Length: 403
Image (cartoon, rainbow, N blue to C red; front, top):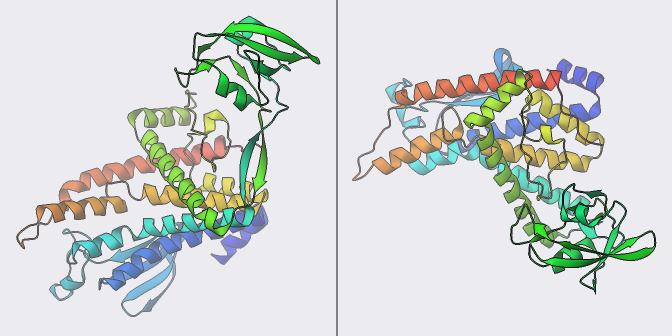
């Protein structure tokens, strides 16, 4: 294991080693959450291993075997009696997962994702306090960079390099001010346009904004409409900012997982693997922690190898990027683990909650987990194909982050 880490550092450099160690620590803390809550509930934990496959090293402490396995792509904690299919000696039944009260089982099931969410909150808060945040400040020196063909601006003769300085004879300094005073769609407006040091007047009828039909639409684009400034964030101010960004990342992770595992999402993914280009949708960009990427890559699924490469690339440009990357990764894994199907932690939550709802008058209902086994196998098979396909794409068509 040490040799593998040395190879990572020599071949890929220090940024990759830092990301690998961070991911290993993250996986370890996830399983430590399950381990500690299980022990606190009086459950018997027989194994705590980092990695899968052949055993490299292990030691026994009390009733638990701790160790390392050869394939470092995950970890696991083995708790006896996780379902009614597992045979457990009668003398140990009282220490099984299935024998414990509902709230104890739920505390174990959600512990891993809870650890990821707490880590994400700490990482986001640390980034804001240490590095501040970036805000877009409207610029009074903006100019038109692109005129959309066939738009009202195109018909009125607006050109790249123009700057709109008035709307219906009312002065406007920034693009935001201009948009704020535009009337509704279908209304004629007179624009004062500064071109070559002179102001000329152009009249046009506003079109319908494609994003909001209640707003008027000119049909211009500018990359100089605002400038980005770094703003310091205090400890108190960082708390609501952290919660806002955390909520945004949770929402985007839920939507992203939903898009992937929809019939269309899986179909598009496997077409990408077969090298048949598909039209990818663009990810929303209103969150402060989104990373710009080519449109075709924004919904790309990446394997653990792709994750490590992206993390290393971001780390090379500053450790603040590493904090944001790990925050996003923790949120995504936390949400992913809560998918309400076995073998995910969310599957145990659903089963435990269903059993609790079916139990009344002191009679405990036990779900027949054998009925869920085919579904679990199907999920594992789909995940296996997605993993293989994502590894293939990461090596044949790696994601390139913009500079």
